[in-house]
Length: 102
Image 1 (cartoon, rainbow, N blue to C red):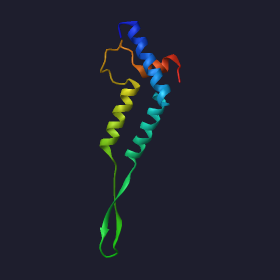
Image 2 (image 1 turned 135 degrees about the vertical axis):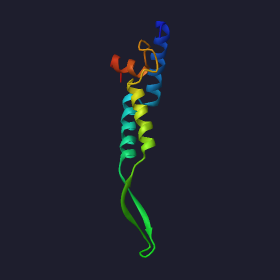
Image 3 (image 1 turned 180 degrees about the vertical axis):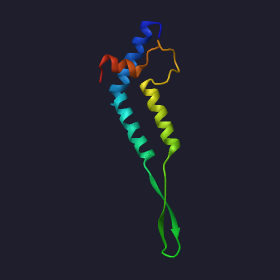
Image 4 (image 1 turned 135 degrees about the horizontal axis):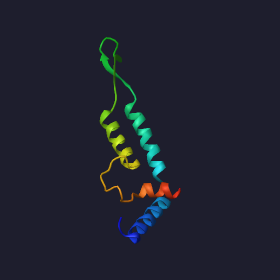
C-alpha cells in the first residue's frame, strides 16, 4: 500500500477482527493443515456383497484430491507463496507475523 495511513488502518482493522473472532493466521493455517490431512487420507473403496449382505473392501483406495488441491492453494495464499499482488504491497497476515503480534 502506497499510503501509510491506509496500511495503518488495515493493520488496525485486522487486529480488531482477530481480537473479536479469537482466530488468527496461525489458527487458520493449523485448521487448513488438518483439513488437508483428512482430504489426503486413504479411504478404502467398498462394494456391496449380496451373498453376505455387507460391504467389503475392494483393495482400492481413494482420497479427495479436489479438496486437497483447494486447501493447498489456500495455504499458499496465506503464506504469500503466490504473487498475485505486487511484491511491495503489504499483506495483513504477513504484517501480523512480522510485527510479532498474536
